[in-house]
Length: 151
Image (cartoon, rainbow, N blue to C red):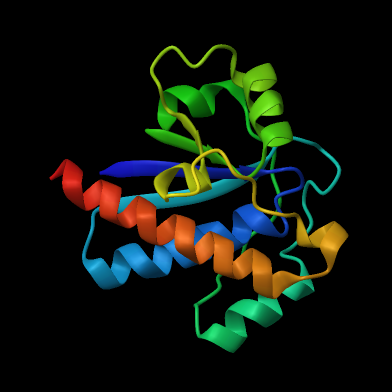
């Protein structure tokens, strides 16, 4: 089983959206993948998924289950095969939490697309959950293809 941890700043918008989108995609593809999500900050710990994320996922028919924000911890680096951030600030904070990526497990989500190195905008600030969803969907589709190629 492949284990993937999606990470953003607060774990209520982007990383949860990626978790639910990816969970739906791997289920439909019949892949043995476990997904989770977490935050680099403690600001939203214990809070549920942002209403904008919930609304967008309902609109596109992606199932949502109970999730409460939690922070990425050092042990997650050992327990997960991939730790996937949404933007360059996430990446710096992921490294601050886990240390050096000695096993090449840490990526940005759009690294699995032709838009390698690009960030996914935080809808907490932009208010645009549609653009964030489109980017996350594109990244997750690329990640699914990457996993399929691994065999």
